[in-house]
Length: 83
Image (cartoon, rainbow, N blue to C red):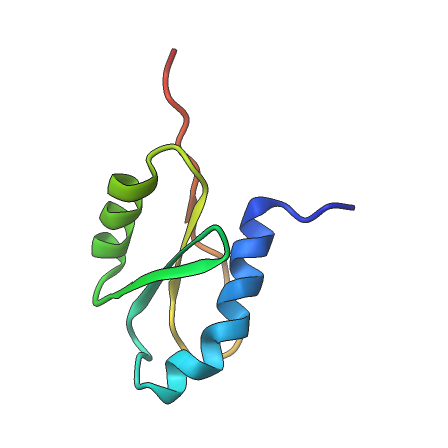
């Protein structure tokens, strides 16, 4: 079974999480797209707005940086243009 785009984004986030935590980024939000960390934001809203601005209808991940283990849910947004 092939991984979805979101699965790949989350896997990348997990792979960089230890580094983010070691740099004191806990409590911030990561914006991940195309298996790349785009930026770190102080709020979920700012990360979301940056994702919309940069990627429009593409899948991207906004994830809280935390050492608390796996989050209850993976936060992502998929936008579809109305035709």
